[in-house]
Image (cartoon, rainbow, N blue to C red; front, side, top):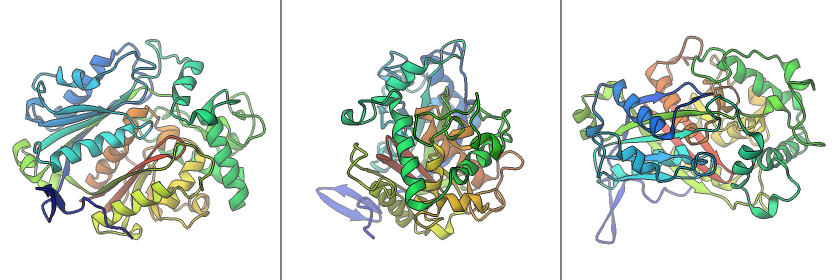
Length: 419
């Protein structure tokens, strides 16, 4: 296994000096309820996110040195760019190093990495990472064609012709490939949706927390559950939600924790993190064994000094049910081709070997794109701190992992968290 090129090293005078990377910790997490933000404007969303996470630990935004904002459809759906400038409008954040990042559905995870790297570069001791998406109008309604077009722009142009809704179509093809190659059934993958809706029912911040479904609901074609693409197996209940929402973290070095007045006992270390990108085009690569995803996850494990066996809680990018299965495999909790089996056997439940997507995942919690990767890390923070809602808290979790994806399993951002 390759070593992560930045692990325990910093750059000075053209040379890498060992053992100079400072540990980075999560000091606070805050998120909105996912679903509909109604009339909330983009400036209000950015302000509420940063102010909200600061209130979690009772600090002023002026104590934050650096920051990053992740979003994907801010221009195509909201006609708003330069989100970093909106963040700098929060009192106390003007003239600080803040940037906007976009990495499709991995934009939130990329924002977290961006802030970590700023702290590692010595640009400050404290920072925020936030992500958001506003995908519905002021009445909570969505324009399906507009959203489909906006998301389709994150695919390779040669793979768009003939597809009305590009991303569901691409993942319907991935789902079909998974079913045929690994000889599993649609009901096996449907189990993932059922488990996640059950988790979402216990999460008050989940978009679908009042919607209850059974395995029969997910495998039966009905007015509420239709095939998305003719001739392909993806159905409505296999899909994540079109969501509004925001999420934010405060990250800090040990010096930063002291400045914020947060003890080590009230913080969680981001012990490992990595990012890797596969070619944008789905065709021509082993889409069921995405090289970049495995590389990023393994690098994060190596940096953290742990193995997959040490992980007992995780959040993976289940934009469609098949990704819940592939995510279990990328984590290393299931062998290649046995990710669906991991869910069917109950190993991903709160009382299982490794609780996966106990938040409800993207399928039930919601998928406000730029917020998704931040919320994954924040949920794992809450797990390790013992702050999850009743029925969703893993017993004595020690190590958590996240796997955030952009595109057709193209961009992968992975983290490993430790108490």
